Length: 235
Image 1 (cartoon, helix red, strand yellow):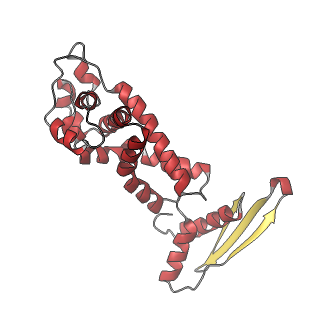
Image 2: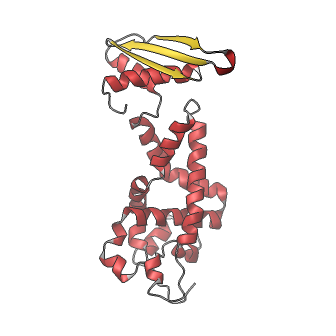
Image 3: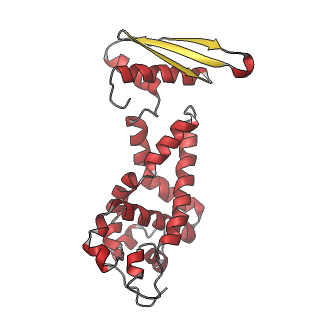
């Protein structure tokens, strides 16, 4: 790393926030070096390698958490939640809250163009910090770090999206409207080696139909169909 690599204005504050995860100031500083800075400071190294590492850590930790937390969701639903959680749109606010924007080392052009507020740049730097935490503290601490940052987003996405438990949301709606219960009618179709389930549920005069490889999945799809027809928030 180049000897002229200075610390940015917000670097000290970020070090204090992350001290329990990464005590190596040089490694954390490297995670904050944008390639535009390197273009103006010969011999400097950017955070791109750490970003590559952190991206993998983030993907693994979020995938593992989703797999364990939502045992009834399909692979497609889990993939869509993960895509939302690891997107720049979701990561940039986390990076801002940590103070990563103020701690970045940018080139003059990137500085003038508002690089400290660019979502993609903030998200990339946050991933680089995750990679630095892995190198400094190991996978267990990195997992804790990633979950601490992303758990609120995971909870929000699962609540507001169609990926959560639609049956629970339909039952909650029924309770609000003082309907005692929601009954599902499930039938099996197809041969034993290719068996599928078809579920129907009627609520507020609307019938929803769903299919799936399991009874639970078919019921969830039926509930989701009703919520969509009711234009219920989150459906």
